[in-house]
Amino acid sequence: MAVKVVSRRSATLLVGVAATAVAVMVVASGAVARTAQTGSVCVLLPDTKSSVRWEQFDKPAFANAFKKAGVKATIVNALNDPQKQLSQAEQCISSGAKVGIITSLDTGTSIAIQKKFTAAGGKTIDYDRQIVGGTGSVYVSFDGNLVGRQQALGVIAGMKKNKTFNRNGVVAQLWGGPTDANAFWFKSGNDDILNPLFKRKAIKKGPAKFVPEWDSKNAQTIFEQMLVQTNNNIQGVVGANDNIAGAVVATLKAKGLKPIPLSGQDATVQGVQNIISGWQTNTVYKYVPDEANAAAAAAIALYKGKKPPSNGTRPNKGKKQLAYLIPVTSITKANYTRLFRDKFLKRSEVCS
Image (cartoon, rainbow, N blue to C red; front, side, top):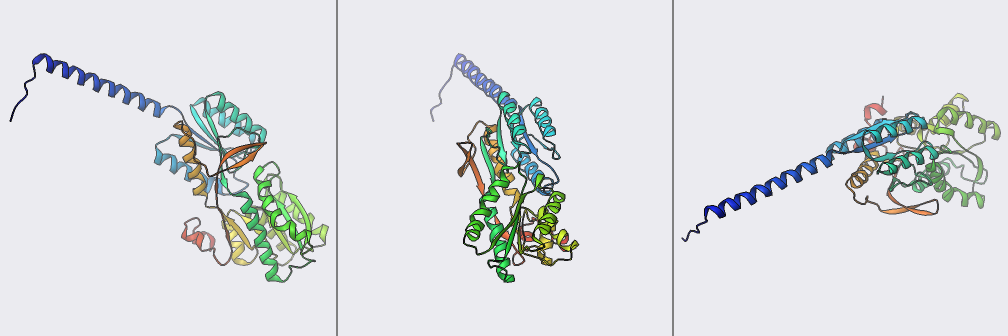
């Protein structure tokens, strides 16, 4: 076998080139490492009152997603205080956050937060609630119109079962918070199902109100007024979420009235207990980890300077905003055990 002889000068030259290449790789590697450690993601959750989901499901799902991705993240809750949320955002930005995931409490404050991220060279994501007039790179949410349709269809099914689906059957509506764009999106789904029925007088339109802050106390006060207004003549209630539905149940029980078809949302322990006991007809199941994982994936993409994943668009002040919309499921007494199989709820929590 022929052996190629390399001169000492050539060998020295090769070693030098190799050393230089290694040095370049090390420097490049160090630069990448430093870049990867620069900045972080800031998750701004809204409250603990509108739903238990934010702390019970969203927070741990986000923490797990970013931990798996090796991305530093700060996850905070504003406790229903828009100014607190603004302060939390400012703290995140000063700590180097480059991507903000915002569940809006107040449109004006949320837009101010987005502007602060932009000024710092960052990006934002509208999470669960669209920031109308904002600059979010993508809107990640469950399909709000489908949520509203499932709620209305659940109430109609309950009225048909009770044989109150007729021209005298009164349907009341308790929509979500009037400062939440999602409340109007859910309402659009309610309207798509109910308005044609009201128009042809298949059923009767009853009182309808938005519930400030999605708060159960506000919902209870409003529903008590609705019962007085109609002389207790209400055959079905579209409740925007389980929190609001729970207020309806409490009011009916306090007045010694029987259960009536009632919808909810979020598949909470209380909501499912009310379904099992016959006080609530359905709840809209949104597997929160799917939403949190989708938002985390969008944040990681933006963090790396890439386009976030999307599967459609949503109108936003005359513009089309990229959106990633997730389907939902109606949960009734017939299929509530799915929540246990999905490990969304524990049987021991519900059947206590």
